[in-house]
Image 1 (cartoon, rainbow over the protein chains, first blue to last red):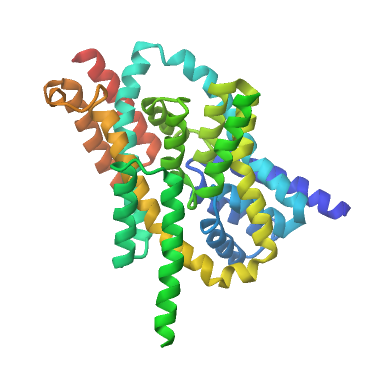
Image 2 (cartoon, chains in turn orange, green; image 1 turned 60 degrees about the vertical axis):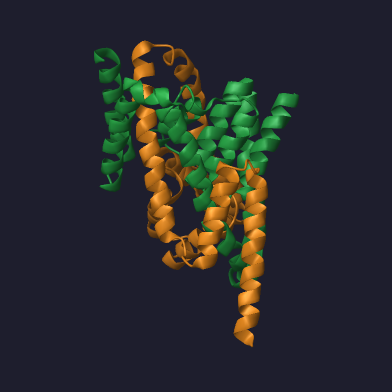
Length: 186
Length: 187
């Protein structure tokens, strides 16, 4: 018990550091988690990390939170999960809270307005790049393209609520893979 | 009190129903935040740049920011707690039934639908971001006669080239900011 509490506290500090020093969240955190938790603390193995990433990708929510909760649980049970998650969230929370006050003051300055005019065009490029990276990693195939086009048209032009699109696509995936499996059996 | 509950529930929904993290969460966040009138599209895009330049995951950053804008410190606690809680609960469950989860054909099936769906959803988000960037006053023929449109186009093209050459996002944001300031004062 005492041992677990000690571990939970170390988890908190470790994930605090990870949360404070990775820009871009999610995947950017994985190498740092690997270094701290596998190499330094030897709490889990490299294989565990791969499994954790796979789980984090296929469960809802931010990758960083999923990974922190999972690693924490593996190392020290519920309280491990709790303190690892708290640790990874806290730096973001504090930094953004401070920034939100500053941002409102700054945004009325003329130069800052001009800067953000330029920045928005840059952000468009960043999102496009992220979209391309995700597209490359996504499994291709006819069903896949139909879902992509369907989700795009439904949200961009038909104003279908995103929640409805997500649920419909999840069901489509479930049913189509079930049918594919039954066909393969015959 | 109602505002806090609304923040919590909205971000809980976002956290519970978006798979993939990072930009995969952007379309849903965008829809909810605009529908509630919490931010304008341009504020949201500005904040993406802030989030890219500060530590931490986008989902946490945007939840904290929106929460703080709507309801101060308590608002940011409510929104952040909302976006974190579904992950936390789901992972605690999955960690116990890990082997079943890993080999589950239902999970695999759902993912074959969700992965391409996220691509389509982000595609739609890109379209709305592009509209805010190139036609901030609405889509019409007049955007072709405004110099701002061409400035944005040049900054976008340059940023895209840099992004695909794997230049760090913070550098791209700094260059875009500098070009925005320069063109604002010179043109």
